[in-house]
Length: 204
Image (cartoon, rainbow, N blue to C red; front, side, top):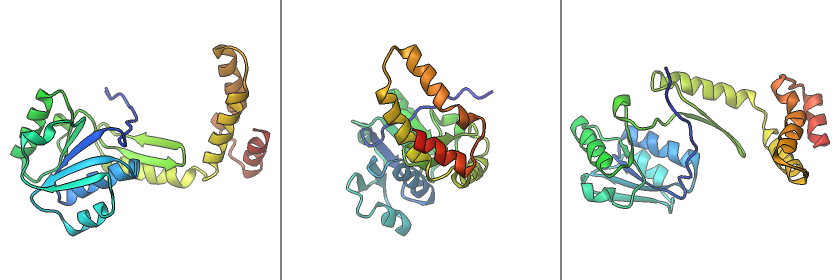
C-alpha cells in the first residue's frame, strides 16, 4: 500500500543540505535544479566530480563546501539529502537530522527516507510528480518520458487562460467550482484533437 502524501515544496525558499559530490549527488542536485533553477542548496563533500562542478557552475543559490560531513552543517536547514558512498555516514546523517526534526532523503535507502525524489514532468505552470513508492525509479523515469511526449506544449496557454477566466467569475465558491468543472469537462473526456483543443483555447 502506498502511504505517501504528495506535496510540492518551494525549494527556492527553503534551505536544502546535500551531502556528497559524486555521481548520485549529481543526480540529486540535477533533480533539485530541474524543479527550481533557484533552489537554495548547500553541498558538503570532500571532493566533487567534474560533472557536478559543471552543473553547479554559475548557480548563485548553490554553495559548495569542501569538507567532511559534520552535524554543525544541519543548522538552519529544512531538508537534508544524504548521498555519500558511505552507508555508515549516511545513517549518521539521517539520525542526527531526525534529532532536529528535519526531513531526510538517504540515497538508495528507502527505509531511511522521509520522502522520495520522483520523476517530474514540467510544462510551464503544469508540474506532475511521479512516484513508485521507492519500488522502481526506472518506471517513474519511463512514465515521465511518456507524459513529456503526450502533453502538448500548449497546455500552459490553456492554464493561463483558465486562470484568467476564473478571475472573472462572480459568485460563491460552489458556483465557481461548477463553472470551472463545466469549462474543463473536455479535458477528462480525452478530447485532444487539435481543432477541438484550439477551439477551447479560443473560447477561454
